[in-house]
Amino acid sequence: MELTDVDVAVRAARAAAEVLLPLRTSGLTGRPLGDAGDAAAQRAILAVLTAERPDDVVFSEEAADDARRLAADRVWIVDPLDGTREYSDPERSDWAVHVALWAAGELGAGGGLASGAVALPALGEVHVTDPAPALPARPDGPVRIAVSRTRPPAEAEAVAAALDGELVPLGSAGYKTLAVVRGEVDAYVHSGGMYQWDSAAPVAIARATGLVTCRLDGSPLVYNAPDPSLPDLVVARPELADRVLAAARARR
Image (cartoon, rainbow, N blue to C red; front, side):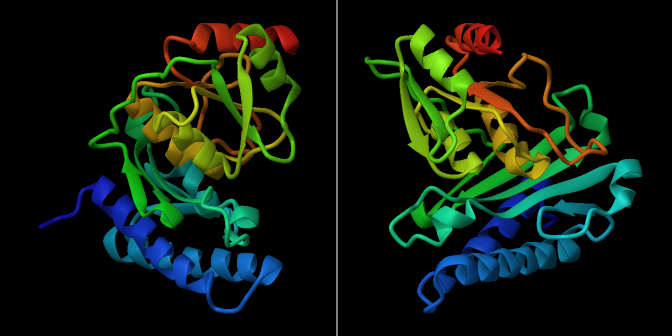
């Protein structure tokens, strides 16, 4: 039976998780552990994509940029280990594996993202675009806004002030986006540096779930663009998105 693109994304994400988890107990720590995890997860994902989709191009954080992607119809955008710092801390679970498919035929559907999977290996979870997760109801209480643990942006602080909300520091970009999908927070506001592989797969899942995803100025997120940089991101529940974006734009 032929695998669907979502099946391939899941298989690749799980292959990475299966090598990343044992490495955490291998005796390596700190930067050497992160480097080993990056390399091992890249090999695991590439092995699956080469076997299952040999004609597609792979665009990964852990490999040289392949210029063929700019003329290709199908490009896998991969972050083998999103959140190296969190992965290297045995107490943390807020790191992820990203595998997304960009397809030229999907250009009119939000930056070309066609399919995706995000693994949260420390939690034993894999989230996919199809079937998309169901968005949980928002609980009573203040609006919760996910931000970087080390660099919370001024725009997020402005959003929290405008919505009478609270900032929730979390780890990797993928985990923060999936935290909105999972109902752990209500929005994620990021500014100050990010690349296409940091957001492609989690954004694909967020969109499939019905969340609003865009740049801080409200413009679309575009993937497989020549410049790998995609430096800012908003992911928000639809009932909050207009207020989140208005507050972020006002701060800018």
